[in-house]
Amino acid sequence: MLNDWFYSHKTWQIGLLIDVVLLLVSLFGLRLFHRFVAWHPREEHNHMVGLSYALCGSVYAVIIALVAGSIFETMDKGEAIAAEEANSLTALIFDSSGLGPRSAAQVREETEHYIDVVTQKEWPDQQAYKMETANFEEGWGLLRKISIDLATFEPKSQGQATVKSEMEHDINDLFTARRQRLLAATRHVPGAIWGMLVFGLGVVCVYVYLFGPHSFKIHVAVTAMTVLSIGFVFTLIIAEDYPFRGNVSVDSEAYTDVKEVAERVFHPEAAPKEGGHTSTPGTER
Amino acid sequence: MLADFIYSQPTWLIAVLVIGIWTGLSLLGLYVFNRMVDVNLRHRDTETVGLTYNTVAVVYAVLLALIAVDVFETFSRADDIVSAESNKLSNLMLDASGLSPQLASQVRSDLNKYIDIAVKSEWPSQQAGKLGGEVFMPGWTVLAHISDELAVFEPASMGQNVDKAEMMHALNDLIKARRSRIIAAGEHLPSVIWKMLLLGGVVAVVFTYFFGAKNFGIHLAVTGLIAVTISLVFVLIMTLDYPFRGGVSVSSDAFRSVQQNAEGSLAAEPQH
Image (cartoon, rainbow over all chains, first blue to last red; front, side, top):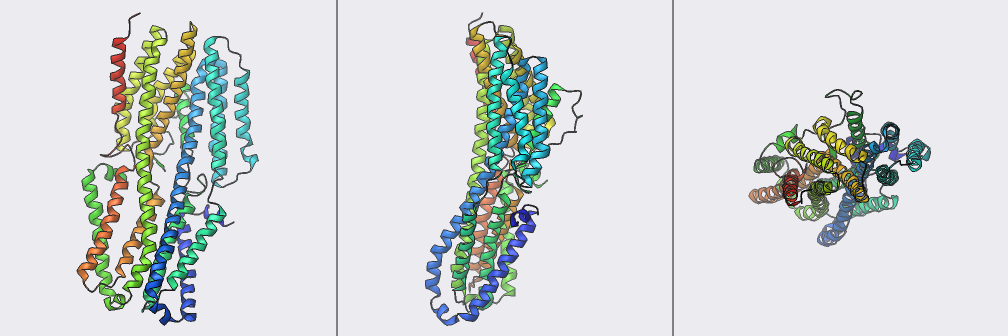
């Protein structure tokens, strides 16, 4: 439920909500702490609290930064998988010339249909995290059909046999890349790690409360800034988690490029005129 | 727009601008803060501020370092992609010897045409950040032509058949490397990460304002040094981001060397 909200809103809205909630909770906790725990003993042991906080704070800081770093890598892998699938589709379309005009046209048509299914149906489903098997059945069905057509194709010459062999290799790579994409689309930070991160934040907050500064305003300021900086990293992790979900996610540009190239090369009469292409310049890693 | 400006300027100028603006704003902020918040109030709690600063500083430092390393790795990966693409071009040039002389010459001529397009047309466009489909279409068309020639080629012997299979495989690898290059040319740090880095940097700098140094000069020095350190990493990330743009970018030399090597190999090849 919370996940659905996160990935249906803009990153700044998520960041704002997280930081406001964390600030309110932590400052409310500080106020309660101040009311129930005397200031003098804390002020006397400020140095000891500080030295031990160095260990706890550093461990937490390194862990949260590493989790953010690993999420960033998962996003990179998601993009690599999509590129791999697009490469296999290009290879299928290009290699099909060697099968003879009729079979080639059939393979190209089916491959382009598959690209339409991926970009127009599967991508929106992935972004909305509708990962039910039924939503991907059409794509699987099309791939199976291309695979069966290829497997039953009877080469009339040695040259066609070589092309068939290469294309069977391409379609197997395509199956692998597709399966990897669907698996990657469900990959996310496990609940246990989120639990640890939130629990760790609680420990960090309590540690900050234990300090005994003379000015309550200074105490409020250091608590707020500590929580804010951790809130920023939480936002970053949420935005980059689920590499195919939400606004910050792997796009389908690689697939639309394959279709555009195929249309320009094999059906130049049907291709969009100059400047009519839809690909966007640049992708966020 | 901002990226266009950044990657059209020399790196030293970007470094001076980024470090100057970031550090200048940080020191200006400190000056204003110092006038508004009593230094004696802060002085008594400098120890607390210093000890709690630890966590904020480590979170930010590790995150900043990880992102800088990731950008550097992406840059190295782009270099590897170009190397893989040129290797496959080289393989195709050499393997073409196994085809019929007429087809071999046609394939080599197409490969040379492809290299010319990549070096003379695609590379300048990549450097200028112009990555629309039109830029890459001529290259795709040449590759599709080579693919078509190979696919419909009917081998006259077992040897030619093996050569055809190997070349089709090499061509598919070339297509993979090409697409990876096109994707890598547009890759850059997501804006959400830049925003988080900037906000985190602001928190890391503002935290230092809460120190209560009796000597304002020392306070300026500490805040200034932290701001310079952070902005230096920003400059590093900017320079290496977009691996095919700006002064520090992946070059097309590998493609040219393929042509030179192929010319040398063909000169040494026995004439049929």
